[in-house]
Image 1 (cartoon, helix red, strand yellow):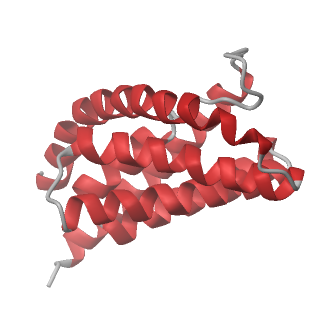
Image 2 (image 1 turned 135 degrees about the vertical axis):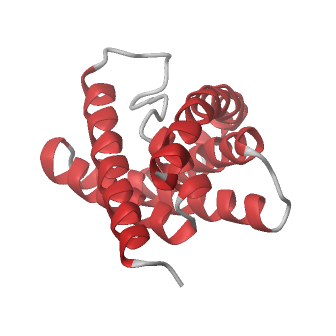
Length: 170
């Protein structure tokens, strides 16, 4: 059972990681990145989600993810971007939780799997919206970009995790 002090620290940590995720979502929304895929994002906000998963647990990581998705959609998103974010975020987090708990993966394995499945979930949503499966040709590109962005997120998360663990232990 957590003490009141530990619960307070976890709550503060979830709040800080949620704020960090929202800030990264905003930065990413204004970056002029275009790699030939409309709406492509690196997924910087997932740094906060992966960090939460490895420091304050799956439930709190889900909270950080939900807060970020809802607030980003309300502040600088659209209903369509919300649907893409929810689908990608939910599938990605579920895969990362599975990889961590069942497979015992470290941050890099979880983040890469999360990045790949985030992109695949969004590709499925795009197929539903466009009512065509023709965009499946993007799958290899989405898998490669998920691997690359997953590694970037894992590297950044690794740097942040040690700091957050230190904050929780004080």
